[in-house]
Each structure stands twice: as structure tokens, then as C-alpha cells.
Length: 235
Image 1 (cartoon, rainbow, N blue to C red):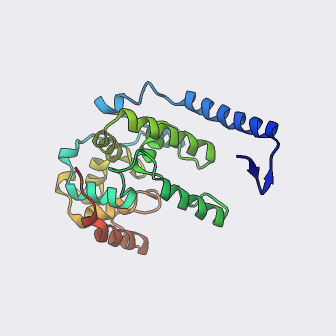
Image 2 (image 1 turned 45 degrees about the vertical axis):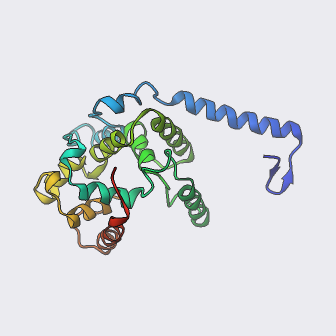
């Protein structure tokens, strides 16, 4: 904190900078919808912020489809595929994968844009339930803070169950049950490993790619998931 761009800062400026940072952090902390976070452990969020955002984009002419399923009613292939691709350290970290986040910051700096998020499943869930999909540093900071609080108040399994039910899988398609029925005409507990790998492959860009596509993007990512599959264990 004592140096900025290679020059030492006077103590007064250091204190002002520190105060400014702490003030911003405090404001963001107060903006977090803390009263909703504990409910994740005991209830089911039927409407997420992203679902509301999509409905508004379509001028409320339709509402996104979602139907809830528990982890017990989902193929283990799906859970392992999602974790292996989106957050291999999900059951080990405390909400933030600092190593991945640092790597993402370096990539973004090199490309001069937010090209990589470095988000864990916890962070993605925070965004899906409480925030919007726009990419900026303020939203990312709120995402980080919500994720840290979620890890303190919600179990990993409850977060994973909400994640697979809240994640977007296509235009108006939210949650694994709707995605499974839409793309493969079967319930989530009947999905094969290949189908699960394809579903997990498109999570970062569900409006540009479909699990049933045979594009290089989907095929490559599905192949990566199958390769990592045995490295993941769901407790």
C-alpha cells in the first residue's frame, strides 16, 4: 500500500487511499442481501436475478422455465461433470479460488478486457441469485463478498443444488431438469456421461452454444470434462 506505480506515497495519502478502499468495501458489504443468504440452506429459490433480467430483456412477454430437482434426482455424472469443468476445487476452497482468480486477472490485463472471470461455483451462484450478468469490477467485488458470506452460512451441497437449478442452459431455460428435458428428452437422473459433459460444456456461454451442437467449442470442452471426470469426487 506504501507504493503506487513504483513511487512511495506520503503517509497522509496512504491513509486516504486506505480509508477510500475500506469505505468502498464497507458500502459493498452493506449492499449484500444478507437476509436471503441463510435461506439457501433451507429453501428453494424459484426466481433468480438472472431469470428476472432475462424476463425484462423480453419485455416480460414470457418467463424463463425452471423446475426444481434435488441432488438425489440428478445423475452423478452431471454433478462431477459440472464440478470438474467449472470449479475443480469446489469442495476444498472457502468460496474463492485465489490462484485461479490471480490467473484470470493476468489474462484480463494482457487482453485489456474482462475475458476471464475466475469465478468459483460459489461466486457464480452469488451472481445468478443476487446480481446481474454485466461484467465490471464493482459487480465482481460484490460477487466475491457474497460468496465469502455464503460459504460461512450455507453447506456445499446446498450451494451445489441451487447452482444446478439456477444456472442458465439456453434461452429461457434454467436448471438441469428443464435443460435435460429440452435437449435430451429425459429426466436428469437418466443422463449419460457424454450428455452430462455436453451440458457442462456450455455453461459459460449458454446463449451461444447448445449441448447438442457438434461445434469444435462443445466437442473440445466435453472432451476435457471426460478427461477430468475421474479427478472429481462428490462427497
